[in-house]
Length: 349
Ligand SMILES: Nc1ncnc2c1ncn2[C@@H]1O[C@H](COP(=O)(O)OP(=O)(O)OP(=O)(O)O)[C@@H](O)[C@H]1O
Ligand SMILES: [Mg+2]
Image 1 (cartoon, rainbow, N blue to C red):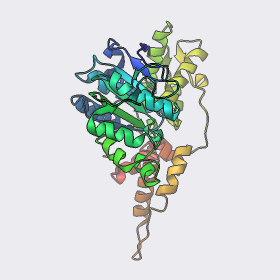
Image 2: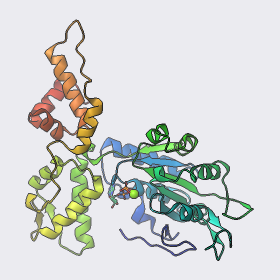
Image 3: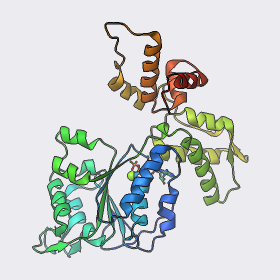
Image 4: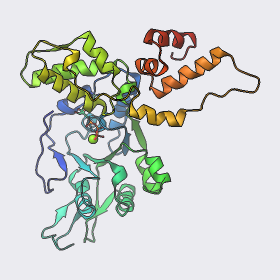
């Protein structure tokens, strides 16, 4: 996806899209997928886009599309013509991040040879995307809170308060509530950011979307590289569905790009799909299983075998994020058997 960066007064750390950047390249129409969880996330994005000053918090694992959705919100809003500025809170040293965000006056510190406006000012009525917000240094957390509360910013070394009008969209792959509980993130800032929250699902919980996304990437990557179309064989799709996708959509996209390079034919076969093989149960699922384990209880009056089976399948599906293939593998039974039992116990409507 091409990205038009413009050099404003900011150095390289922040990416600022020109107001004339084409919304078509970044809008919600680029969010592929029909699973209810992704459609729900997009519907929330469309809704909040109509409120161009509301703060948004996007939560999702790596590669689930947080930045894509943030852009979708920006370009669907009435302020789409204003800048979209992205900055990664974990990638920049603390003092630099502070002057990037809030700006500084000439002479505010040794290297401040000129005055500089911060991103919150430069974004105008556009969007500032604060990626990896959980890594915002503790010292800057109360400063950001103040700016968000008062909609005013004071440059470093400056006296004057200036009004700001941008929307802030923050993203995190960490559980912020947990970071608050552990004392790494301020509770008041968490509540201020958590006004409108959008959850992005793991790819492995998105069922048929693996097929939809794989086909979409095969088509778009071939087109971008000027290659004749290559279609995915049924067998290749089975291999893709079996994988746990810890890197989510980014990992899938890269796998398809690799497969396109490896395939000399007009189709992509299992042999072209090189993905890191993991243990039979993906690591993320194994980690979650520790939390959910022990949920089957046997009451003193006893329990029927059917009820134990119902609970076991329900818990396994939960661990597998409703991925029936993975659940079948975890239970050592076939996928049709899992599907039959899901129907029998009415576990998925
Ligand atoms: N639903 C989707 N449809 C099409 N492409 C998608 C979708 N979700 C993500 N992508 C693509 O996958 C890649 C990763 O998405 P993105 O950078 O938005 O993820 P992220 O959640 O910000 O990841 P990270 O946490 O690693 O920063 C991008 O190339 C993006 O365009
Ligand atoms: Mg990102």
